[in-house]
Amino acid sequence: MNVISKSWVFSLRTVVLTALCLAFSAAQANAQSLLRDTEIEETLREFTDPILRAGGLIPSSVDIYIVNDPSLNAFVTRGQNIFLHSGLILEADTPNQLKGVIAHETGHITGGHIVRSDYGNRSAYGSILIAAGIGLAAILAGEGEAGALILGGSQQFGALEALSYSRVNESSADQYAFEYMDRTGQSGAGLIQFFEKFRAQEVLSQARRYPYFRGHPLSSDRIDALRERVRDSEHATSSDTPEELHKHKMMQAKLRGFLNGPAEVYSRFPLADESNPARYARAVANFKQADLRNALKEIDSLIAKEPENPYFHELKAQILYESGKGVDAIAPARRALELKPGSPLLEIALAQATLQTRDAGDYGKAEVLLKAALQEEPTNSYAWYLLADVYERQGNTSLAKYATAERFYAIGDVASARSFAQRAQEELSRELPQWRRASDIIVVSDTQLAKKRGRRRGPKPLVSFTSR
Image (cartoon, rainbow, N blue to C red):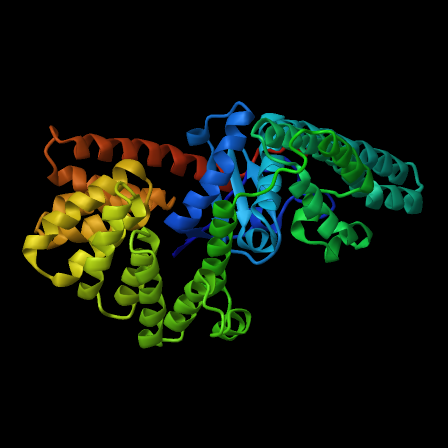
């Protein structure tokens, strides 16, 4: 499992006012870490893609991100992106509950609620301006105290309107969620169970609520309306398959192993528990404790039971690689890729292990693997970093500079991207596709840097007062 740190910048068309930002997760405003794991991503895709198709969406056009955050939250953004907090995945008791939330978020996308929330927020901002205008007029008329009270309450007027608009969207998303679950032959009961589990959120203050329910206001009316439709559905009693339940438990065990402290993992999964999820979580906990012997013992026991499971081999490779045994990691990394060909993260894992041999004959193998991974994930900054290292070892400094430019561009550092792209262009032949791509990076970076300079200067004042 990899953790990728990224700062996400969201264009919220609301003013930065606490009252109006209640409907947005703190995760949208602050730097977050994203979790990357082939197994977990595949499980989430299996749960999500049928729902997306039921909503008329193309699954490949919708990106799913796992946010490394223990709080219970999920949200969507422009560009058809679904964000799930690790805390939400761990709190879902069943796959059906998790699918229900995913279906609800899908409803926000298909219902155009992101665009509509922009409209709602503009309307709310209008309420603020109107109230502020009345307050300012009162102050100018000599009613200073009354004007101050109105001015101070102007944010509240806007917040009430924005949150009211959000409640409409939430009820609508609930109904979409039911429809999508029903169309795929699944029960919508999971979403009701999820809401029932956190019904107490209704009576808590905004500050004490889970982030999910600050942005997704919960009410008994919503639950009752959803329950009625689920009850009348022919799929009301449909349940998760044994395979889905197993994948859900394995996903949760892996997350707990990596994200929770070892003591907590050992308490939840004692040695007496010999199930696959328990062994999985303990293997990771032992690895984090630098107990290589017991980590390998647990993962080898899993491989013995399921030798065709690529993710057990992948974890063994990671344990060995990160324990300083990079060369030993090659065999399990290669086996994982054989069992799951074409997986970008597994290709990157094998490439980085291969580079540990320091054998010039292996550099070409790593290059092939990294280029294959970048065909699928062209913005994977770590793959570009490793490819730059490969080129440097091969003595091809011009391509190393180009790969470094791609790396910086992928992480949003356009100034560094432009610098390396320009240096690469000076050495590359104009006939090479890398030269043309470097030229693209320079042009786009120049545009983005110009925009940043314009924002720093700030907007021109609406009214200019000059002395006469």
